[in-house]
Length: 70
Image (spheres, rainbow, N blue to C red):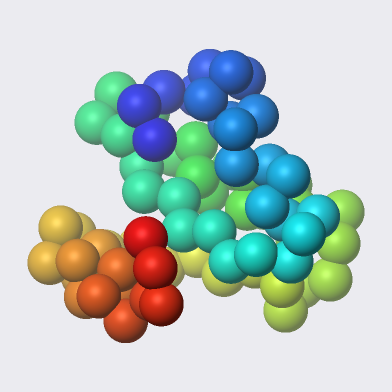
């Protein structure tokens, strides 16, 4: 996620409505944006639909390697 720009975030938002898993990787300039977005979704929807997994590059790579597609 390069920034907290609405244009960037609007590209993946329809995936949630389509029940498609989304992994949000924070950018260098704004590392808290994914956390804030997930907290907003948890407040608006079911708690079990979203998770926050803080990790570094190796952890992010492991998460992506276990996904069916990325």
